[in-house]
Each structure stands twice: as C-alpha cells, then as structure tokens.
Image (tube, rainbow, N blue to C red; front, side):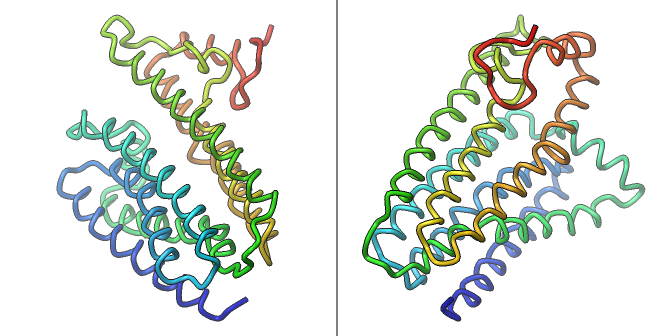
Length: 264
C-alpha cells in the first residue's frame, strides 16, 4: 500500500484529536459530556474530506465513498445534535453514570475518553482509507452492492430515528416505551441499521486491495453495540427510567435484528 496512507492517517488523527479537545472544553464548560456523540459522528465526514482532497485513488470512487460517509455522518451527527441541544443543561443518563463511577475528578477522565473517541474514528475509518487508495478506474459489482446496502441502512436508520423522535414529542408518552413502527420489531433498530451501514463499507472495500482489513470496522461496531456502549448501557438506563414497562418490552421484542413478528 502507498506510504501516503500513513500521512493521511496522521492528518486524520490530528484533526479528530483537535476537534475532540475543543469538544471537551465545551463539555467541561456546560457540564455535559453527551456532546461527544455529536462530534464522534461529525469526525467521519472530516476524515472523508481529508481523503477526498489528498488520497491518490480513482476520483469517482473517492467521490462516491466520501459522499456516502459525509451524508451518513452528517445525518447522524445532526440528529444527535438536535436531540442533545433540546436538553443541553441535562446530561444524558449514560454519562451521568460514568461521571459517578469515575470519582471526584471525572473531567480529567473524560478528556482521555474524548481522545479515545478520536482514535476510534480513525480506526473505524479503515474501509475509507482502503477504498480511497484504490487507483483502479474500474468500479466493481461489489462497490455497487455496497452502495445499495448503504442506501437501505441510511433509510432504515433515518426512519427509526424519526419514529422515536415523533413518539417522544407527544406529552402523553412521557415515561412510556416506544413500540411503534420498526421499534415494534426491535428494541434498537437504529443500532441495527448503523451496523448494517458499516457492513456496506466492508462490502464496498472488498473490491480494493487489502479490502479484507475493512472487516475490523463492522466487527468493532458490533462488539460495542452488543457488549459495551450500545445496548447494555442504553437498556440499563431505560430500566432505571421506565422500570417494568421496559422489562416487558425486553421480553416481547428482539434486542437487535428486526424480526417480522414479535417473539412469543
């Protein structure tokens, strides 16, 4: 692989780390670490712009993958921004819990947590680096398949987010569990389609040299969603806030993959 990939990685890491330092300063000022999620999403479009401008790959291929990343990262970041700004003075329960667990000086730990998020941005961007280094002028069927899977995942995630947002806007639903639309078949359809999006990047990257390295990204995302910062923490918070209503929801719905029918 061209040595320029290491410079592109370094530029991307520096950019993401600087952004996260600024975000940490803001989070410290407003006492709300939840803003990190906004810029974790926005960092992927930042990396995409760097690759679009500097990577040596075939221009049409670069434009295709970078537009995909910019749209997906921008949409998710803006969705989280809208949600977070609506209660900026109230930190999300997940981060309140971390603040308690991290003792008397959590802001120092949050600084390194934010930097770890920047590093994760670059690691997860491996498919983008692989794709943007490919100089072949022929687009593979795998790349078209990746675009198709990406379209389905973006639409699915957008629908899930819209359905949940509409549910929460209704005052009568305060304290209740959303089981409308896609949420009737999965407790986390947004997470499922987010993972599916990373699978689309893997499929796209398999047409490029070293494309197999792209499996790292969906594997990490799946592990985080199922075992670490996704479903476990989200459901712990839901049980604390909704109690038995959410336990019943757990009993009757799939945790991740949307099924066509509820479990018996």
